[in-house]
Length: 487
Ligand SMILES: [Zn+2]
Image (cartoon, rainbow, N blue to C red; front, side, top):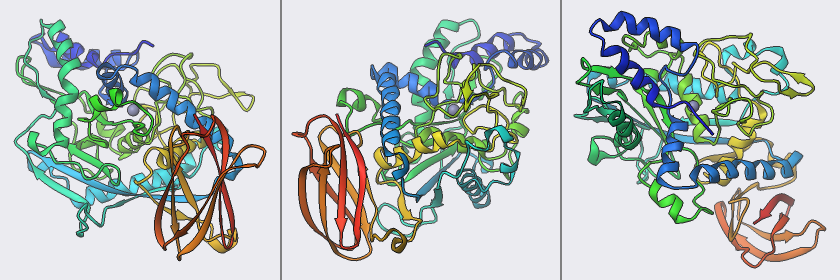
């Protein structure tokens, strides 16, 4: 795979800012180039994955395979899926070097509203989704709320405010415009480590809360200061998210080098909320209209829950692993071009245009308004298999209608050794757990007396042969079954 480099914006500005007559020329070129390649600041999530791949070989390959394995599970589940609602506690770490960066509660609350509207498809601009996509888009049943309890059990409003001495979390570029190779190396080696300082109090940031139980979102100034280039303050990334890491099945050679990257989302403070009083300075004014709607964070949380960009970060031959997002060859250019159709990709017998409405494109916030069911399936499966402790699960169908008094999650799935079963009971109950082969024959059976509230059972499946199985839980009011893949 070949991808546009994160260096491009830097090199680009270096080239043109090195000209003493700089600014006007920069802007002119900036906008011309803009239509041909991704020179504008962007999301850093895919670049972060490439950086992780450099630190932990095979990371990208394992990540690709993981999405494919999730899809296999989703396909097997078919119509069995329960219409659960997933509620995710969020903690905002507002890391500020000045008053402008110390975002108000109103901005944070507005951002949360935008996220909830986007993920529940209650966004007012849902009506703008073009008719050819209406069969493919929907409500993800994922919700977010400001954490009410901190990791020690104390009460909290879910907003942590931290004053910092660091004015530019991107770091300070020690090179001048003529040192392109050094700059390239600096970006490769240092930029992400600089940015992740915001996640550590020892480095001027704010420590993560238990990343298994909270969605941590950090806001601050992500720009790079370039003293040798007229003190230019370069914004390379509007935000970035850590991708899900399969800590159940991946070897420690892969996961250990990534431990310094606290799971969560890092955001440039200007991109938070639709009511943020801060403006993007020159030469980034275009973002004052295209990225001021709070949807950059919707996009980043999509990454955090396992989604890729809809253009697959490549040409028509590269996919985002989602069947109902049309292939496209390049990101939108922070605009809203309804005429773009860069790849032939028939979905339901129709060559659909580029889905500029999708939150996982780089289009303007006024354009983005939808997730597809394929994307929703991946996010839901990530929540149940990768991030099983993160969400409260509310069973939206009343128990009585299901004739059941419980629902359950299983993870990891696919499983290689230990399978965890997480379930919440209204009252204490006896449960029978059975693992059935495809012909319905019990491979393993066990009885459990469980208490009310949340329970986690662990089954040792090391001796079970590879293949597809059904896990059946039976209580007094009936049974529930989920499909499991043993690897
Ligand atoms: Zn992105």
